[in-house]
Length: 192
Image 1 (cartoon, rainbow, N blue to C red):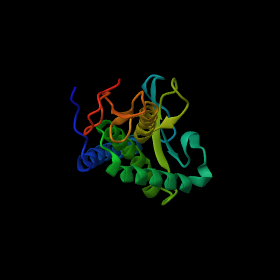
Image 2: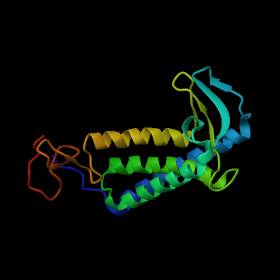
Image 3: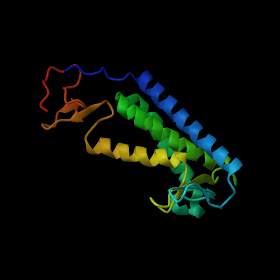
Image 4: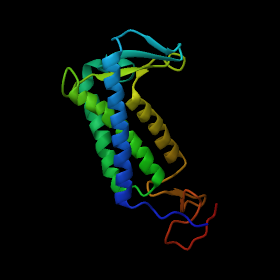
């Protein structure tokens, strides 16, 4: 069974950049629409109690935790974004490129709020407006959705031993690609 050639660094960077820009744009556009069209701190039922829009400006993290140390979240988001950018040179897996691109977009969405929204750098409040009371008692935004889902995806890839280059640990501890084949350039047959 032949496997795809590893993703080149330029291709991985392009995938990550395009997806990050798309998520960032979607996040900022939906926040703009929420600010323009929703009354502050008043529930607007979209689909009964299944989906409610409730516009708030969150100075803290999830559940408004850490309101007095907003600048720490700004630093944390900047560090995560820098790590993802640094990882671009190590990513040769399409799956990792997609996940890191979407995650970077979510991180940049909330980082943009921390830098540019009131009360100003580095303590800007994040615009949250999506509420799903049946699922969890939190109000969130598009960036938060991508951050949470992609962190779950990162954890799954790490748990299943998929490396940034697309290889994974085989049963014998040798690097195998995600399809169970030996990495390109080796003559070892798949043990999976």
